[in-house]
Image (tube, rainbow, N blue to C red; front, side, top):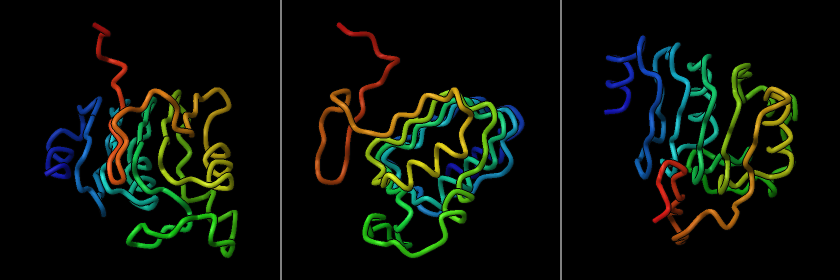
Length: 156
């Protein structure tokens, strides 16, 4: 279980990479050393992602591709944020934690509207590299999963 691993290694965990898991509702303890976090295609909603990120003050790289992080997503994650104009924009921006050390964030295929993207930008350092739109770097797209090529793999 992810929470148990995080609890056991909370003071020393520097990176975590999970893909294709069911992590809806994930909450973790304070992870003061975590610098790289990839939770791709893991059934997270915005509240889950924001709660986990808030526990990682040293976070430099985050990838949350394939999770429904739209502002209008209900608990089931089915509603598109473009369909809901109600709600306070300040509250939306405050959902995301401020991560002062963040250098790169990947939110491709997360159902984010332009307003969602603006809220994210407002909480990021000015020099952060934000990936918000799906590009030709993604392969194997299906209706329920997207397989992202790893930048760690060598081309052969």
